[in-house]
Image (cartoon, rainbow, N blue to C red; front, side, top):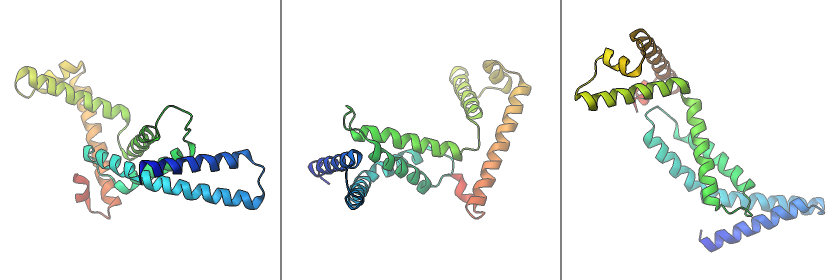
Length: 190
């Protein structure tokens, strides 16, 4: 769809939405205007749906956990649909900028729902990874457990308890993935 055609479609969409909001139409006119608004909305969603697929593809390439891209696409399309219906041309933001942020948040929300680890646990695991990387750079070798916990400022007992909790959560996630994919756990090694 050309930029001009797209602009005309948006203009028609706003005119129809304003007519519906103004009221004063007969029931037949209202139904006709609502049908036209849905047709225009659907054309806009189809036009911008490539943004959803693009963003899901980018996100899926960075995620190591198993995920169903179709679920993420569905979440993104729902957010796109809502954005088309609520976009206000009176604001200085282009629609593309407005909708991309909404799509990204919907994908992140969907990923959070799929994550078996709490946000706090995930942050702590990242903190341990960063500390290990810093020590490898500093020492020129892999750090010992005592060096790592000393750098983190925690006890060996705390560290081992966390690693045990983290490993159990990973196993639960792996088993759940096998259940979701008909017992085919190989799908989870992505």
